[in-house]
Length: 208
Image 1 (cartoon, rainbow, N blue to C red):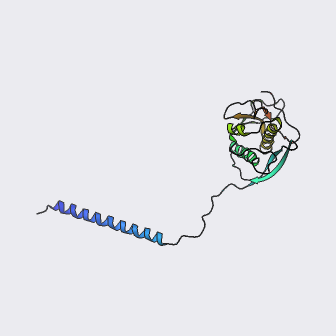
Image 2: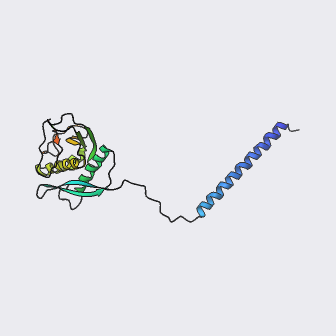
Image 3: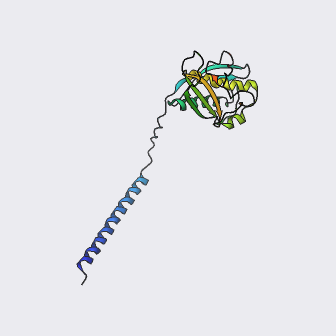
């Protein structure tokens, strides 16, 4: 005679097996229906991105050693430091285009931009921010050497940043997070530059 508790355990196991089999069959049927259903031709909506805006770039021209403002429309992040980095990256990337009047090699050029309170504002000047631009060493390695071409790159960055961030009053440069003497042998990167319109004339650096 089989004990009662063993019979109960046996039939409980049988019921569990049947229940699992039913679930498996149902899952197989659902999978078969999904495979048999034609693909929906409706395209998936693209992810929402930031809207474009008009931005002024101060573009360098090697032929006449000029800096000329030009308006372009593209999307930028809203966070100030990320916005400044994206702006300068976009500016420098335009110089890698085939028709560039200031040809530079393409590739990422800026690691970070830090917007800080200016610790040494000019006498009589309004309080403002110091922008610290951290360039990549690879950008310097590939930058053409020469007084004019290096100066135009620096002045192009300064003018573009000044136009987009009027609160920035001074600009410094780092390379891979460290002070660096020149851009490619000539343009000074150790001193602080005033943030100003660079179309009128080259802006010399101020003292340390």
